[in-house]
Length: 294
Image (cartoon, rainbow, N blue to C red):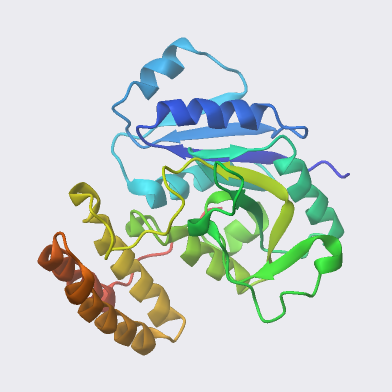
């Protein structure tokens, strides 16, 4: 196997216990990354103190001065990885627990595909080894092109263990930091897939340590503190739909959703209704900048 320099990019915010598990799993890979970058989005849970006392030559820890969301963290992390010099970036959230051969299997697929890919997405499972619902990917029309190589062509991926190439990062730019949260991984991998196909790698298995195995859903959401996140979901998804030429269809679907929300929601009904339409309205005019890196 040709040796490619791989930098693991992990973004964290106030989840030190999960981050420790993530780091341990990344360090214990059968094919270890050549560098590990931890981007801390200004955590307040003692993450900085932990890295002050736990010096580790394998890990480069960078603390941001403010929380710029997952999108801002991955934007910054990819930029730093490219600037430091690397061939591939292995991207993940801090609640990603890779199994021992996760990176090795991504690189095996790289060789089988002879480098003809834009991103390679791991097989994301939940704690009980069932598929992680929020990380299930939509297949492309040509999904079966390389099934003999153990991969399935997909339209987009998530930042719960994907491999990307510095060459393409320089070509298409960085994840959009203005997204803040939700949708930044979908947008970025859709952009990558315009250059070359992206693939799901079934043998590269990671565990997503989320509390419940379900999709984010504004109708069933009962956590008042999480409701404001759906503004970003609506705005960012509408921007993506507009860019993909599907803005009209997306808008109609969300109007229908709003009536379903009024009918079926028991808690925070009108707050949710307001968030939905504020997000949709913002999405009509949202034209974020795509930053480049050399």
